[in-house]
Amino acid sequence: MKRISIYLMMLLLCAASCNKDNANGAAEGNGQGAVEPGPEPQLGPEPETEPAEIDFNNIDPNDPHYKDKRGKALNLNSNQVRTITGTPWDAELWLETGSGSMTVYENGNFKANWSNCGDYLARVGFRYGTYIDRTTKNYIADYQFTKTGSASWGYFGAYGWTTDPIVEFYIVDDWYGNTGVPYGGNKKGELTVDGATYTVYTVQRINSPNPFGENKTFTSVFSVRESRRQQGRIHISEHFNQWAMSGIKLGKLYEVSILAEAGGSATGSVEFTYFNLMALPVE
Figure 1: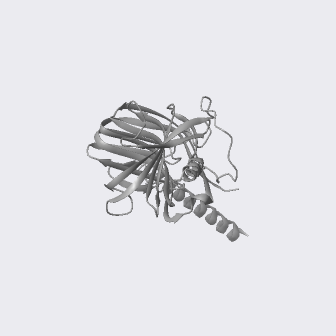
Figure 2 (figure 1 turned 135 degrees about the vertical axis):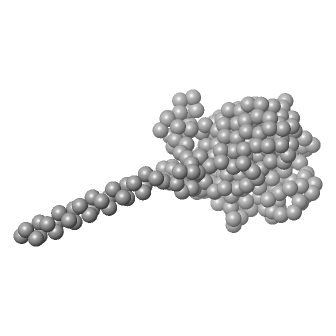
């Protein structure tokens, strides 16, 4: 009996020692402050149906998409694309001349700054390796941001690309300069989405940069809101549908993102304090 008691005591002492070693190892962690590795954000599964509208003047601080739930930071300081671990989204920084950086968080919120840039883009969203049929998903974005600085032009809202044909698209809810109308844009008409009127423009890009390799000629499509705003919900797929009905052909989706862009000797910053980009099942 005595031998059994001694044996049990030895087992207990060994277990306590192992637990202490495991706790110390977990406390040391990665220490780099990057999104990967580390605990994944608890955003939960995408809802099957469209969630209720956000009260942006009274946001629940426990909402996982709000700034108070950002999580760890990932910094981008050069032209690159990075995956945000634990989310379906990627982040990209792209600039042409000048300097800039971007910080993106585990819940998709991001902030960026730029100085004397010819063209600067920061965005977070879906980037598909295998191009998908746009009609298979219902894309909706909720956002809130603040911006500073000045630029000859700039766009804030939804952004992305299709392929076959190559189309670059913008849904512009806010902008730099006097108007969100693209330079050289041809007016195609108007549409109403989310209770507001958007004017649609197309621009022919000649021998221009794109995500699909060498410079190509393609069309850029813009929906420009009648009055600017810095928070709200964008029913992105509804713009797709109305563009198609007006005769604008879209290909398969390569990217759907939320964007901040500034150009023309631009200097400034942006901070997104609420971010949620959804790809819901089509009913």
